[in-house]
Image (tube, rainbow, N blue to C red):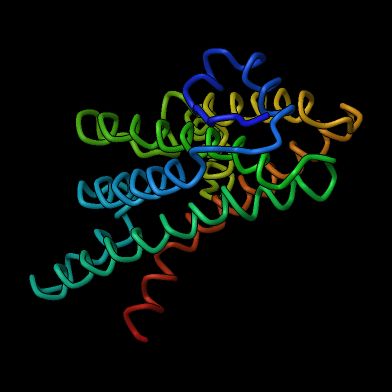
Length: 225
């Protein structure tokens, strides 16, 4: 059986298309979708960085810089975000798929299809940050869709705020989506699917918090290199 991958229908008609994906011996349209998602990922991060999203580390030092130093730092920031978008693309589609492949009896390529939709959800989430930042001046970690808002009222610890800011409604939907897909495609016990998915996301949230917390330090290292 040949299955033509359709990411939208994997959302709107999930069970039907997961059945077809599970039964498929050949997959079509994979490369087209990979290149499309690569373009969308790079475009999203270049656009958000151009608008200044996540540039607090650059802005903090601008008072002591001349215009050339500031523009150079801004260019480095955009290039860094572009590189980050490529790393995110590889990580979500290939490394995450490998992790789930380790404890599920599902082909690696089919797990990549699931992760394509995960990446699509992540990009949609990042697009919601744009109006929040531009029109309301709200940073991603205190988005109304995340738990960062509540956490910021309870503590001033930046790492903790970043950690819970990384937990959003979009992230919870991704967890639900991954568990549903893995339950369809794999014969692994659900308790292990739940455990594997939750551990993975806790590690991702911790990593996101660490990257955000040390953002300024990393930029300073790049500037001195």
